[in-house]
Length: 96
Image 1 (cartoon, rainbow, N blue to C red):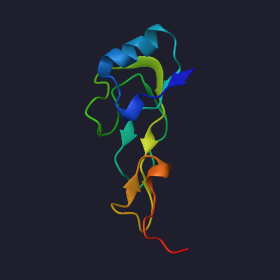
Image 2: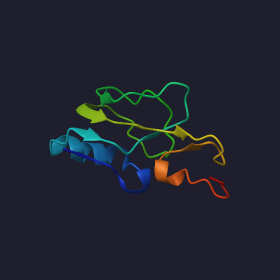
Image 3: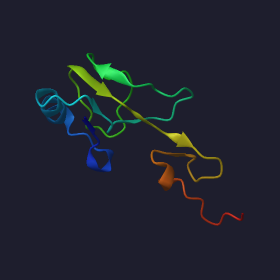
């Protein structure tokens, strides 16, 4: 069983402590900065191995809890080029 925090805003260490205490297997709330290679899921046995986009990521380790990070998608022609959700990658004024 896993969860995703609303608006991709993890609840700092408190959220992960609750996940750990209630036996959750994974979280998928942490957005990853645009990188040339995607970040694969990892355990929180150690601190997160990348920059925290939201500023509300866990700062401690939570052994046994997995993080399924949200990699930014690159969409050619999208203003800014990157988005966390594919449904945010809407191309306005795009002729089919």
